[in-house]
Image (cartoon, rainbow, N blue to C red):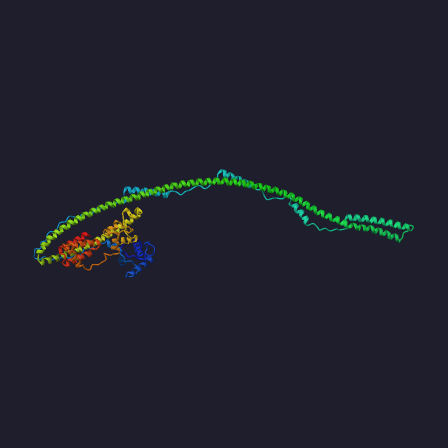
Length: 599
């Protein structure tokens, strides 16, 4: 693919497609690794400087005429400027005073008319429009198909009833245990724990006082009896003996009182212990009542929990069933939703296949028809060339007889005049050639723009494969890689897609992919500059084939055209043959015309 620019230098701040093309070119050569964004920034400037430095250009980071020209960019401003008329020599050579009446030039038939090829696009046909409309409608149906939606889960009546029953039961949950015996238990425990230790006060014991009064009284009586008995023994008179005996009896009674003290102590201790045991027994009775009440409370709690577990299980079962039904219904709706979406996708696939298959068939038929027209035109050109060559050969033979009768002076004058006319004609033809190249390049530029615009409009050509490329046309890359084919297409100035099809082959003069690559990329046959022809080879070839040098040179021209020799190369060859007298002036003119027809 050729690159173009509008004649203005590309520099910092420049934007647009020409900057994009320049970035792509620098990227291909390895100078630029930034974004292909059509914005001439610092990275693009540095890459431009590196390119200028590598190719010996003035390094200023500005892609001007010399820099872009070195890269092969074509100036659209130059392409839009018509080629100026050549400065020709209008002074004719004076004719000698001899018979110089030349034979009339042969009248050749008009060139066959180049056929008009069918360039209709598939999308411009009624069938193509209908197929595209169907494809777009199917695509819109897919794109506009809504996402799957479904209502949130709402509990059913049965599950809700089970939940209400559970909530109502939980609302009647037993409160914390409240003891009615705790204060009495605390009071009894306090009495038990804080009870005074046992102590015995003899004088404070009422029973001891009773015993004391009793034994004092008995002591007094015993003392009185003893004193009376002792006094009776002495005649009824009191005496110290009687007093002593009486006192002894009294003390004996009091000693009996002392003997009863341990028994009284034990009795007091027993009463203390019994009082303690009574407290323990009373605490146990109250604790039994407490345990009975707490057991009843625990039974109530247990009944509550049993009922709660039952209600909870019932609710879980009802809700799981209800939610499972909800999930089943939602999954069914989702499946139906996806089935409908898949049907739309199937319709889209069918519409897409119909569109691209129709495009491939249309362009294949169109290509075949155009190829048939091209072949018919080539056949007509072959017939025209054969007829024209025959007439020129007959004219040349007659002219040769006439010229042989003329003097050397006439030949010289004729040569000089023919040379002047030829040079003028060459100037005009070169001017027309340059103008044709300019117009061809300009036309190629606009065709390329039109093709790129059509890709943007239609989204690209349909169908591709191992033997088919854009628009359904066949292609044959041979043993070339995609990268090699793209390099070849860039060298040919055609659209770069990596597929060596009819357009690429036509631009390469009908050569195969490998032959064209060797010629235009590797340049194995076209880069050799003209030096001089091999005289010995020419003479040996002419001797082997027989006939004149004219016939041999025509065969050489055929070979040169096939091998890709350009106009300038073949002109030098024919001119040197004339200068070395291998061909005559008339043969020279005929060979030039033959070469142009071949080109």
